[in-house]
Length: 340
Image (cartoon, rainbow, N blue to C red; front, side, top):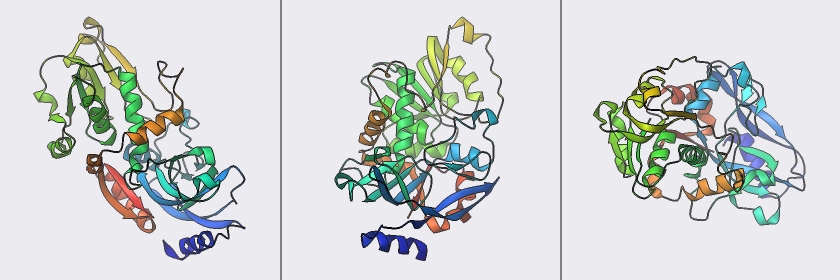
């Protein structure tokens, strides 16, 4: 943790959080460059909690776009995450998969392990309603997958997968694999996880999922999900979609412009192409679901020990600036966990 972190932990352990303390946070300073900055964090107010981070997770797809400065100017406001500081493109403090323990705040939350949408930072203060208590059976080290599971759950809702559907999920990254995992648990579905890397087959097997390369797909599918961030997959999807099938685009392309072949099968098969984005609840769920309820359900869905297979590596927080670019650039990175 380093001397600065030890100093803060000592103050917290002695219950002497009576003056502002210093934390460290990862800041993206310029395209391809990041560093740890010291920050004075405020004293927790009556409705706040002070969280000591245990782990955070790197969301490779989104964080790569931020790290490379590829967030479109039109999306600057929508891309602002909870706890983010600075502004796009740089410098900016970004991230949204933090798991920690409450060390100051309301008595009912003290010493509870919680998940919070927050950048990579060793200590932070947020309103108490911003943290979600982990289920007792969920290890903190696996809870870094919560934001990914929440996204996957939203995609499944947007996809409207029904019992008995044939479902193809393209992209065996974290989100795509979780979508296939959830889909496969719907009674009677025939779900296949598709990826161009044969090395992802063991991951699918570890989660009890069927795996295939796109060339091996046969027959027609009721629902197709693209979680690859590759527009080429959509052309493949148009070719295997059944009549009036639903194709869900779960990728985010940042500042890239893509082209789609909207003639031929797209019109002849009366296909639906819909987007899925976790920032909003599907219309079908808004009357009953809140963001808090969705996140709590995502945490419940992480109780399966097999999901540990989605953690592809771990790095100490103090070494993160030197390792960040490498972690993001490696194609075999799934969820990379940061240990505090």
